[in-house]
Length: 345
Image (cartoon, rainbow, N blue to C red; front, side, top):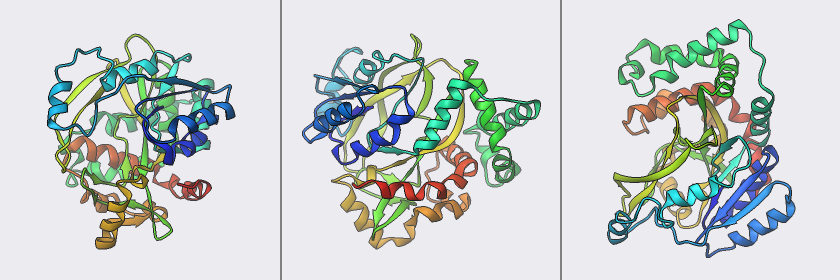
């Protein structure tokens, strides 16, 4: 977990995931809020779980001015001021075989994460039907992410997934765990964007802020469970084509990993970025003007993905990824609606 001024959601994020993990390595930098104090409090609360690694360097990654962006591009690849170096510094302190990157504005579905951890540690029992149908779901849908012909609403595969993916969800899950444990894949986790509006939790269906446009789901293949070894690390990434609507630039990190397949598992957290100060007021202002662009969190599972699609950008991989996740795991949304009421933000 990497932290910078996340005091508003930090405690809830830690509490939601720490019991489901063998260890939680927390690194922080450039904090001007109470994040360091919260981290220390949680370290004392979970002394056998939490390892704290302060990072003493200023990191330049997001919300860069044009001058900062041009400067960052001149830095050597191993500069401590790059976001990739910050991430790698945390990664090198890992003591276990498998790793997942957790953001401080994610609140996890604790029991679901714990079950996943236990299935990875203990393995899952598979029969022939599990292997056949699990591989079929992966081959037809996951392995073809971004193929715009296959994922077009005019192609029969687009509609086939609405039946087959929920029907064989459990078999596919076993297949994914088994492939991961045999070193043949990484596991991909996703989340749901949420915010509180009129004392009810909502998800965005295209809410616009100064810096971005927000859709219901968070995480498109960028949160992976992977094996920690010399082949897994972060490298600097110049997102040349990315610029926020208020003109800020980005020079972030890209995960370097073995070219294994990715098995998508579904929703494991709610993403609370929209609740953070500085963005929340914009979200509420937009929501009042465009009430059709938001939906109550507990109603999201009832929405057909064809309706969600109209709010998404045109990137084929993103559309197909989120479409698959929606069909795979939407039944789990209502099970976790009450979880958010445990926390105060």
